[in-house]
Image 1 (tube, rainbow, N blue to C red):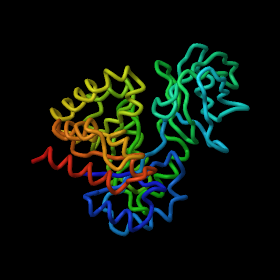
Image 2: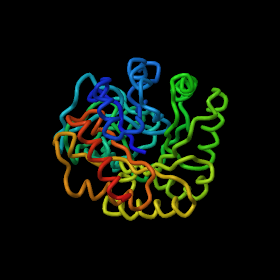
Image 3: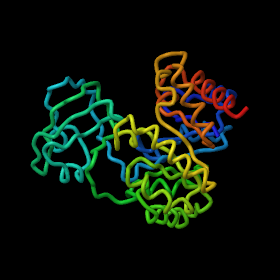
Image 4: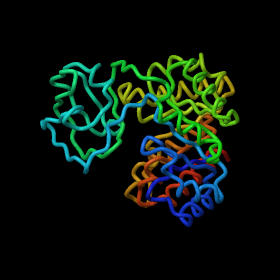
Amino acid sequence: EFYGTIGPACAQLETLQRMVEAGMTGIRMNLSHGPLSAHKDWLDIITRGIPQLLIDLQGPELRIGTLPQPLVLEPGQSLLLGQGGVPCPAALVHAARPGQNLLLDDGRLLVQVAEADGAALQCTVVRGGTLQSRKSLAAPGLTVASPTLTEEDLQNLQLAGASGVTGVMLPFGGAEDIRTLRRALEQAGAGQIRIFAKIESLAGVQALPEFLPLVDEVVIARGDLGNAMPLWELPRCQKQLSAVCRSAGVPFMVVTQMLDSMCSRAVPTRAEVSDIYNAVADGASSVMLTGETAAGQYPVEAMEYLVRTARTALE
């Protein structure tokens, strides 16, 4: 299967049709940026010719809130997270201590907590860049208490069946999380919807053998997974997870930054096409683009490179 992610760059009928013509078989909708009820316009387009619709629930994932405008952060600058500053989950503010590193936007930005008073975190920017609304937030080594499904997740599940959703993606730490989602789907009258378990933490990596029999597909989510370990260990982890899924006969997907350079370039790097080829050669049943199609300048071309490279690996 070949998935793209819907967003402003591709949310027009003609663009999505061209992506389908390029080989796209399904689309992902990231509900961290707004609930299913707010995307009726997108759903109307998707149901006109795209067979698979995955919704990516927010779940226990940490994200910053909505900003009035993007923030340009320079190394050495102070940044306030929490009350009076950049909105972020209260559970993180309560759990973090001075010295804690926080990775923003899939690790593109790095800040370190200097002071914590229970209401806000005074941080120092270590690796700067532009911070935008609703970007991911990771706290390596820190356990932040949060429910498997938020109230917003449950509301989205109630609408899923009637919206044509075929699969649900959620980060998982253990088997009980899967059972919680399965029960919620059945209670919403949507028991036929497939569960895609995102592995994006060390807890998820360790628990994989335990919950493999309970899921329909595993998602090797390299964005957050790359924040949970030194980046040079990520390829080995991906290979190990691929092998575990293969031996259990459970389909798996590889996702995140597969063609990241194509957000702004019409042609990918040699390393990127090698990455796609290797993921498929290792047995991936699905590959997915995220920001490349949601916000990139070349969504159709990116899908063409994804599909053609993957098909070459299957020849």
